[in-house]
Amino acid sequence: EDTYPTAQQDDRIITRRCLEARIASIEQKKPEGIEFRGIAIKTQSSEGIESHNWSGTNPPYFSLEAIQWISDNFSHLLCDLPSVDRENDEGALAVHRIFFGLPKDKNPQPDLYLPTVRRHSTITELCAFPDSLPEGYYAVSLQISPIDLDAAPSRPFFFTLRQQD
Image 1 (spheres, helix red, strand yellow):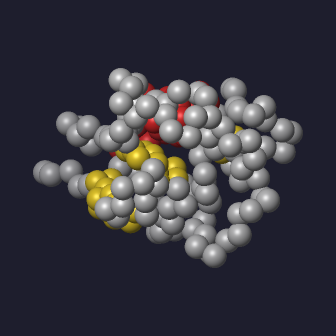
Image 2 (tube, rainbow, N blue to C red):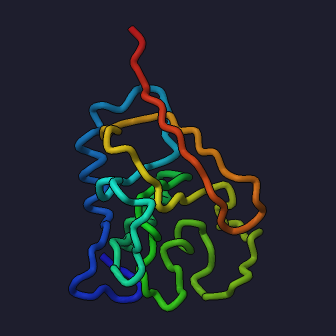
Image 3 (cartoon, rainbow, N blue to C red):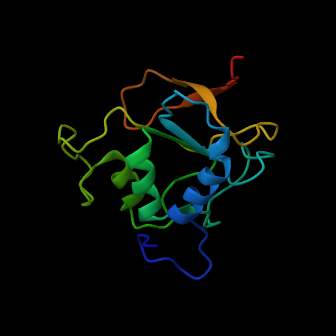
């Protein structure tokens, strides 16, 4: 799968194929009649995530096909990574741009009123998922600070869904 910039030998990439396989493995647990608008992706234990120094570690990131698949199927992405983009991507933020429907150029002030822009979508990075939270389907209350910027702190709360008898 494609990445930007071109992947290096030691890069760890989250691919569309991997995401589709994980979703398929829990598909039978999906409650009927509920539309899911978000996806939460946990790549590691949350122990020490708040104090971990990510700089210079080349953490995993998403392939261009993976983020396109996510943006085609979900409005909200929550992940425990410091960025969905490669750490050293020359400022391109290609994965963010695909997810939010922004032009591929590095224009720092893109036209946010283009019909392709997904203004009501969110990415939550560095999400500390509890280790006790099993893989599955949840209702999420995503509390976002009322800051009018391109990034704002958020606090997700996960609620277990139960089938009614």
